[in-house]
Image 1 (cartoon, helix red, strand yellow):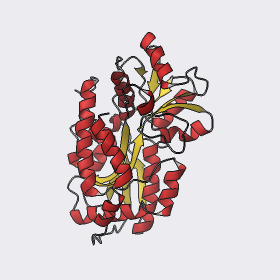
Image 2: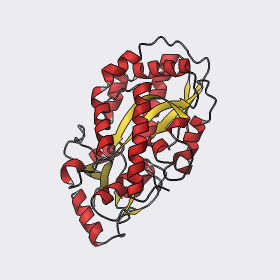
Image 3: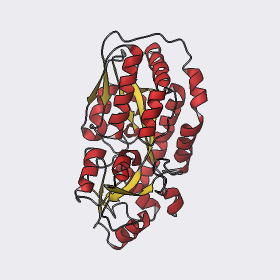
Image 4: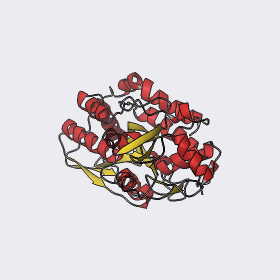
Length: 327
């Protein structure tokens, strides 16, 4: 990932809470009068699903109406993102627009971009991990890279679909280290949960899913974390070194999760959602949930989020072009 995006991610996590809090003070009083559909473009059991279900539960309490989470998987994220973008912008469909809104179109999978949704609030910033099985012979990321360099194509990795963000995490790392992006072969999966199951079964050698998604299995000794693709170590897993400190390239990569609405959502509705989302994500319940996953609370409202997603689109596009994943 480019230094620009990495810096932006760090600033987002650490410094925008106070600024966003003032935005949420706007007088927005729209409320749903019936159940809302909360679309998740990825499968159950992963980090996007967990964050979305928790947020949907808190929004349901805040608005007094059910928020029904629906996993709309398929098309490497296109199916679910399309369902959000093309829904009627009346407030009764929102969902988890993820970093793939900034990668799918570069990969030639869809014409959808961040301009086809209404970003409401940032939900999470999610650095990738570099995780192996508990019985893996490798003790560091560098050991894996050294083996892959000597035996290109022998090792396999997984975590998401071909061209997805966790594939980009690995291919970008290999490229940054001066290696062929295909030196470790990518095995597509339908998400983090099935990829980790495959890793535990010995079907692949590495997964590069979010470290927060692998956290519990690492703590239980079922998996072994070798690296964290971030500039600072994860507080919940402080013994796992960052790629910024161990690799010559200093490569890092983080995904993001937002709550967003369809394109053309009325400003009063979007403002009401922004106000409610920032309120519940500032609650003790949300903080406890994030701590349980080893993640920090991040706060960012609509205006900053629009800028963030636009700059992310440019940075990720540059990386995908560099490693041959852009069409």
